[in-house]
Length: 156
Length: 156
Image (cartoon, rainbow over all chains, first blue to last red; front, side):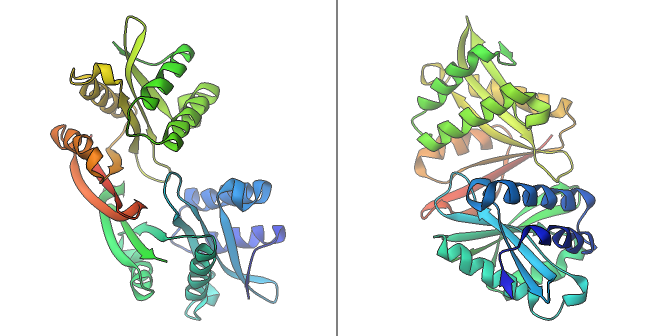
């Protein structure tokens, strides 16, 4: 079931990130910080919304999104990750669809997804192309030399 | 002279922004917030660096930049503005060059500049093309319908 997470889901979200095999330590820590802001301030004040897919109390995956400052109803999908053991079961697709639907309910107009151009993110990029996103821009060497930023967008 | 601003320069920076004729009220308030963070936490902790061009105590223009999280030495030029009365005198070009030099000294590798695709930003876009930036990406309808995000980059 996809739902808003409870405070107790925090450690499991951390574990999902730590087990992705693609996130760096800094990236895992970044999500931890967004989670703390979400817990202490709530989604509207912090600007970070979380949803989780849970099964028997176990977090299979999560997504985090929020509005982009100084835009008219443009949202960012900040993070989405699925536990290695739960992959290929549609969890990621379900979370992405639920995030889009929640953003639509918030009035969202455009959703931005940023990811890496590295080979190990090829399945991530294929996932967005398969779920209706347009590859709209690439910034060469953005993350580091040889690691491009790839930006996908979807009208909601 | 281009220098780090003092606390007393804050109101003048605000006035430069309020007088640009292109910034919205939300954008002016956003710079005010970055300025407050810069004042209370300093550049390294806040992630916001300011420089000003001053003449006889009067702020002619300023720039604000900082490192992009989760990248290897990529920096953003967040804001740059020149007082209407001081335009066409090379103040903007001087501030941009000083910001680039300061970012190089901080170890910066790549500088990102984001602006709008609206007609009233045509001179802004021409300014970046004339100062060695590459127009690397456009995100359609990013700010609002009909108002694209235009991204320029420069290797430092």
